[in-house]
Image (cartoon, rainbow, N blue to C red; front, side, top):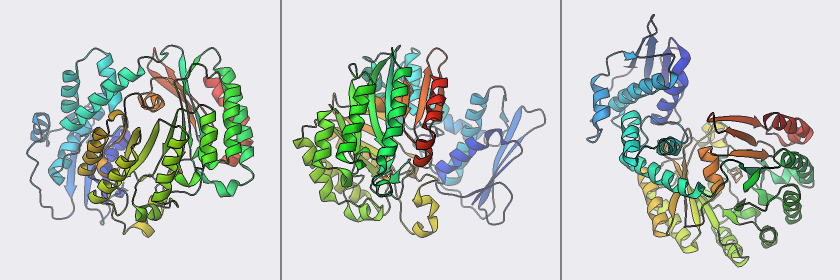
Length: 496
Ligand code: SF4
């Protein structure tokens, strides 16, 4: 347990996020408590010009040896670790950055560990790179900035720059002025995975009633299409949940509705998250193909059966292989596979075995996630039940997946991070040339307005000139969504 004791809460969230990156899963307290291991104490002085930050140990602490390669900028921060931090409450960003740099230095002293992304806890490191490159800075200048400002490691800087350059190339043909993308959410899955934090309900509970949801969705799609008329639809992503949890005829109806409501003549891609192999049938794949779906995702997460059973996926490794073969037979030439490293009870050898199987299947893209234990996931809400599970995510595992992706002829094309990620790593999408998913880049880089329909979805409107995003969120609960769909439409209308 760690105490966070502050006399001003302005930067509490930033302090907590960095602590979480060093100590994932830890409990934080806001009052002195005899059970805690140490406290992070932050005091703003009366003039509000200085912030005093220190770590006070409550137990005997052996200070570890520091890593050799800490870099010049961090070394300087360590030298002044006992000085007050000059702050400017008018400049929140700079002040936050200084406080995080100091806290990072204190935590490195305490743990002897560096974090691969340094003080960066945000989810879009490539957005920083992209903004700087667009502003005319060179790759070298961007790299120095990330090193000095966030203490990011050379490997991660290289990954972020490489990915941003690739993204920039891929986004060139988009309609930047008048284009938008569409997201449609199907919030059903065969069962709920242990780590799930998405809007997803077991389809069994909706047997015979899913059509009510689709009717409401249709209303929202029709209204959204009207609101967006005159704009160019660049990409469509049908995700969830698992859209293929729907029956083949429901999928057919949904795609008919999409064609009827939106002008798809200019779209560059139409992705359907087939996701769970236990939801895929040949008939459904044929329906997707007949509607011109260009990209699907078949997601094993791991090719180790014991893990699949443990995380509640209710499908076998064989089913993954069969679905993949079936999708190829049905003519899909852009299949992505999602994987997770850091799953419970998995080590490096398991990740390697999974990658070997994936290589044999030969998909067109893979998306490698690091396990993130979100607040709403059963893995978190039922901590007591799962506390004995060993969860290890390591840099070696991440590097291994990157090597396999390169060997399969894939390049990283989008990258994002999540809070509470095992080991504070990242999620990376790799694809062969011509097989990247534009929607994934657009949603991460916030380069375009995304109109979203369905329960639990968020419409994001980009005001390019002001570099500002505004959001309209739909309710998550399916019953509520059906009942209140007109209200969702109105929310969107106000925004759009
Ligand atoms: S397949 Fe995805 S959305 Fe569905 S329960 Fe599993 S993690 Fe959640």
